[in-house]
Image (cartoon, rainbow, N blue to C red; front, side):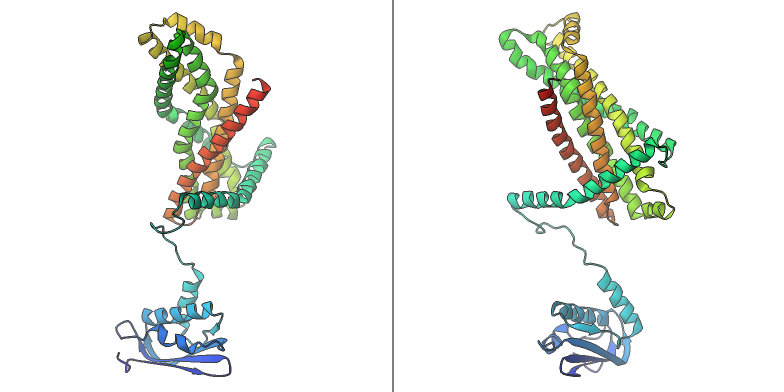
Length: 376
């Protein structure tokens, strides 16, 4: 250790005060002392630590690293630190370093590892997030109230752009998934109905299932993964770029300008996509019935018309509207709650999809029970 390059001394200056004297050249090139050389001096009776750097000739991050470790030790022991004796530049850099919280990076060993612990942690986080969710829901209700009275401020062009993105551009993926789900329902029903020679009722199963339940559910899950994550990423990126703060500075409510068009677009388009998904699913059932189970096209068509009632369409539309509102709520909520980093944007997108699917599942269960009890 080259003690000629630096000087370090720690002496008591009173009954409960310790003064650390720094001198010479404190640079990384020199063999600087370890902070542990000062730690034993911080006895139980020390309540205040000061610095004397009048003899300091040169310094760089080596000094800051040493002082940072000393300040952390003092913080752990509840010791007051007076940095007035340090160089002004060092004081500013240390203040900045202590202001920014330590970043926690995800790793394999971070957080709970057991399944029970993970479930408990997720439940606790969900409960803790309920006040924020309810607060954001209140802001949306107020924004809808301003919309009804003509006081909401957003561009109509943005609404049409969101409708185009949510509706027409989602048709290909909705078509593929709905067709495959219709095939699955037809084969599943036929496997059981052929036991009693009632394959004609495949039309009933596919039509009612797709229009009333499966079409809305599958459409909601597709839109949650496609559009909900997109909403969270868009708003999260705006949060990172401080664009949302700029809206508030200009006196524009972000909920009116950014959230409201997205909610309206999904509430309008998801019910229509639900009806479209039901139609595609019925076409898949028709294809299976006519090519595999020798059911005539006219017979399948007649049985489908007999099975479907207006209430089935209304139930599907109601569920589609609720699912659309929940997807938009989850995506916008996570986007507005996004942090100020690229990793936070990714986390917001993932959290938006998980939250949307959870809300859709809960809503589907509750609405199914309610409609059953009402005889709808």
